[in-house]
Image (cartoon, rainbow, N blue to C red; front, side, top):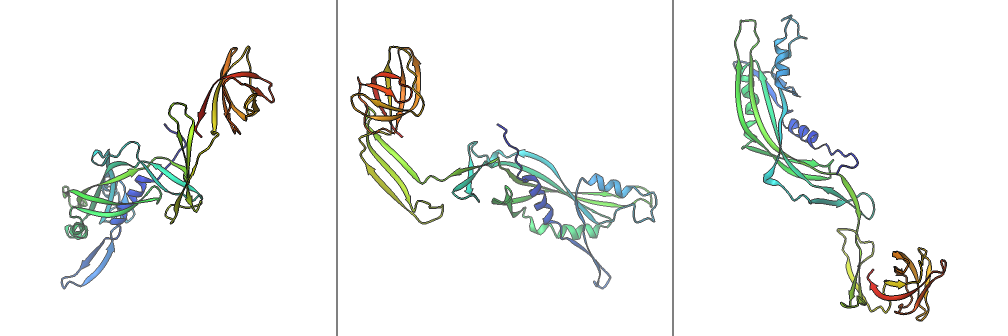
Length: 330
């Protein structure tokens, strides 16, 4: 099940995409005449809001700017991850793309869909700052905002909706006059992430050979060879298909059963010859070997072997009498 390690940065990429949406929000300060006094970009960081609230509350010296973090700011984090049964695909689904290697295609297992939840926290000291930030976000979510996400390290692209599911407000204004106020707007989002399995490479099929066999004897009656023209055609190229019909008298392979008086062991890839037909072939495989006989798979025939003749190995000198002959396709 698990082979070589692989990593497509699926969740990491989604975190980057989500953060990029909110990394260019600013808060503007104005005077009574609506003149702009200052404009500051709101910092955004990945992490739980409790981490930033703890920094806000840690203030041994209220006059030191190095202790408490500055507000406003935003943080976001992953809240949940669960399988998406609504967009489930077949377990055997694969995605195939052209490979950077000549005459190869890359195949990816999947994708497998999951739903992932994000939480965005807006932390400010003043309500107006929080409302400015909120108003720069909400018009784009109705309730979803669709982005194009690169998947499997940029191999695939998918339009992915990010849906705003809820908004909550927490105004922490309890304590004495020395306590820092923290207004927190919490926005919950849900989106999808698709996971891909390992990549494997496969070649292109440019030649197909079809054998038409006689049903009872399995003898080859016709051979159809289908090839692309040109023979090095690539996916997306314009090409034609050529069919070549032939009527071979000699099959690609024959399976013969032989009888012997004792164990006769033939050598792989040795030449064998028939005593009556004069046919020669290469001994590809010997199986079912016993003292009384065995089965031979023969290839590279120049003529058909016949029942009743003896078949002799050129190197092993093994001899057997052919009992049956069966034509085999390529």
